[in-house]
Image 1 (cartoon, rainbow, N blue to C red):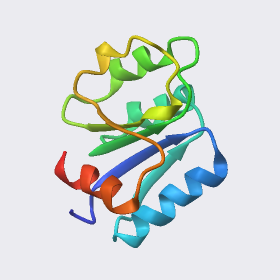
Image 2 (image 1 turned 180 degrees about the vertical axis):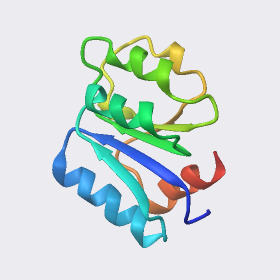
Image 3 (image 1 turned 90 degrees about the vertical axis):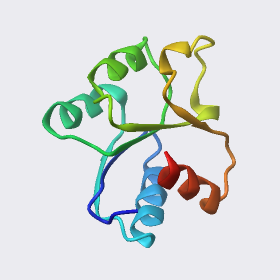
Length: 114
């Protein structure tokens, strides 16, 4: 994995968001932005191009559909599964779903291979 990759972490839990950042930095990644909500992430996505978006927050008011529309087609989308309550996520056909709990090695493996 290239240490210059740009990653956006969308996580509604501040402590968990910090853990994602620590984990990614341990693997040499330094260009990491974080957002607490899907709507907050929109400003980052409109102003930056990310290699990967990690999504670990609830899909409130259908915001996930809006997010999918503004994510670049070449951006990897990793969705942590237990966060989603929407029964129809078929519009995320190119996303990789990672079940919770996950091991760091399996998570990073998905990040690298996608």
